[in-house]
Image 1 (tube, rainbow, N blue to C red):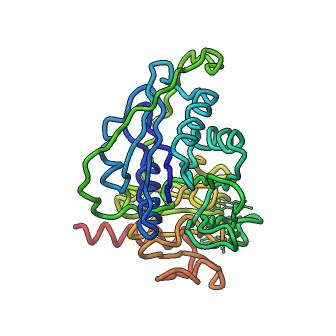
Image 2: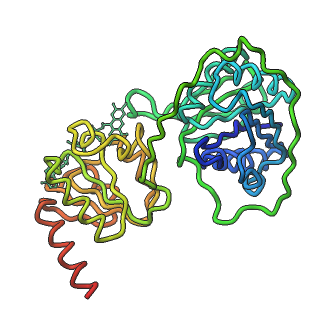
Length: 332
Ligand SMILES: Cc1cc2nc3c(=O)[nH]c(=O)nc-3n(C[C@H](O)[C@H](O)[C@H](O)COP(=O)(O)OP(=O)(O)OC[C@H]3O[C@@H](n4cnc5c(N)ncnc54)[C@H](O)[C@@H]3O)c2cc1C
């Protein structure tokens, strides 16, 4: 049995995207149970400078194709080369990060391979399916996130999935493995380069949920963009990152990149403080694995209290300033 992982880098830093390592580790744990192999597929202009980390996170082999022509995402070229790699390797399963690149390329490859693709999986496991042998079971939210659907592709290979960054966990310590990298033989055809890059506008985000021990998030209950300053103040006092529910984003209290949940980021901090957030299933999908959850809500029946380790029934406009006052006193 074999799982292929599409390996991606951040072109601005030339370093691996976290999701590539997360998928390598997930594939490693899936394949370890079935004596299978994990092979990485990289297409681009040059290998990421930290490529060796893939092997620490369970990759067995990496197949790479580099060409100076591929210094940007050229979807058609990526499709043809990945298809050729997949045909040569014949993996049972192929995993892509649900990044901008992954979301662009994975459907093209799946269509070219005449197989199925399940987007935004939250859980993957391998098991028997009727007469099809071992297949990949792909779990993802469906019907607006109100149910978790398990999707199977029993009759086509490879079975392909995308997974968002932060959904699969990395171990605290990786493996002690040496890189095993081979070069794939291909030629970029001129007709595959169908777009011309004139300039790149780099939007550098300062938000780093993965590195944050604490996240303070605000919801619709915060009430206004002005009130949301209180969420920032509490985060500042705790050295925390600021998150938000989709309702808070939709109301324009904060930017979309702070959204946590099914269609936002997935976070697992040591402490998550939810202020004026009801706790919808879609929001919980992005934060319920946090080690400690504290909820501040005026409604004692709010669903967020069902998953909170500590609940404060009250108006966040009064509770947050009190918390900040105590934190300042503690610090003196
Ligand atoms: C396909 C799909 C994807 C979605 N993806 C996401 C997602 O990624 N992330 C996400 O968050 N949502 C997502 N949603 C939206 C989700 O269903 C909810 O609408 C949203 O999470 C509600 O946000 P909220 O809890 O801030 O608002 P509300 O549900 O309106 O809750 C506000 C809460 O604030 C409390 N409150 C009011 N005033 C105060 C106060 N002064 N002090 C303290 N508490 C107060 C209220 O009691 C209430 O519980 C998605 C929905 C769909 C259909």
